[in-house]
Length: 415
Image (cartoon, rainbow, N blue to C red; front, side, top):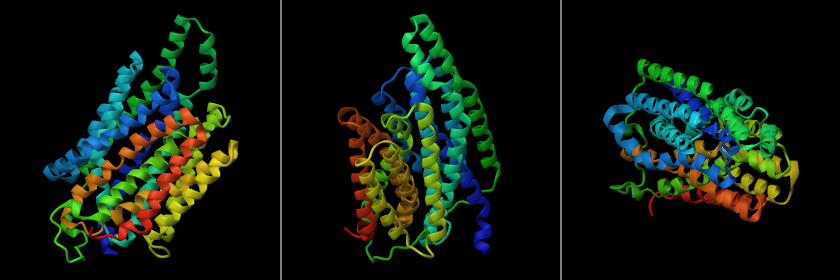
């Protein structure tokens, strides 16, 4: 009980950070259709939105681990929030010039800041308490994340995508000057929201600087139980295979979450109608997190929960493939429930026993977020070449990989 009281405030502050992660990441689902209109992009071109944001995790994860070792957890969080604020500021000149490359630079900087923040925050949550209940704590963080995602949709959706279908239809009949004026006007919709977001990020940075956050050292993690002397991070198969599983898990979440609007459009729904599917998939993920909080570890172990979710993901993928219209969309939305426990369960399974390698291991797991950058591109290409159901086959393959990790691979402590 004293342990719980001691870490209540730090976990609350980390929960707010997870809210920042969710707010920023879920904005991508709005930016994709928004950029399609304002910048006149096709589906493949808009994949650069998620690519630019999430590839930063690959580039910056290991440097983030080094930075955290040098300046510590608290200063690292402050720096990460400031970098994110610089990224959001870039949206202002990008909006005035309608320069896609400048938007992408802003997204990359936001991803860079988040890479630093997540490299710090995720092992922090895993370490603060028994490894067996880490999935429960991570599920609580997931609730913060998805509630912030709902807020981002509710606040910015009506601003960025107001009358989106009408504008998209009307610009086809406009002259060049009138069309440019209409697109410029819509482009400026991001300016005021991103000014507010920048201010809030800087305020959050100051709060994190002021609040006392204890450093948690790697020695507090589980000791090695295999009797094998690990001299390299590559000697932990449960970690390396966990990175692969998380890489696939990020692919399932990014495809279902950020491309549910285009998928709904391909099933015959207007943009305004398909926009609400983002809310539905967040609700499905919240239900998954609540299930994790209630069930793990009292009623079900983390590995079994992960296996069950992966199996359901395979079933829902088959359902989406062999149906169409709203039924197919519902199967994709239901995948949100399965995706919710991937992150909370894979992290503790992968970090179990890594000891002094925890910070580097966390950086490796953060690099797995590259799945958010790479798989949407593959998904978009499959959809363009073979139709919307072809991309769901990719989802099924990802769930199968996660199932193997949950059932077999996480148990491997030596190669």
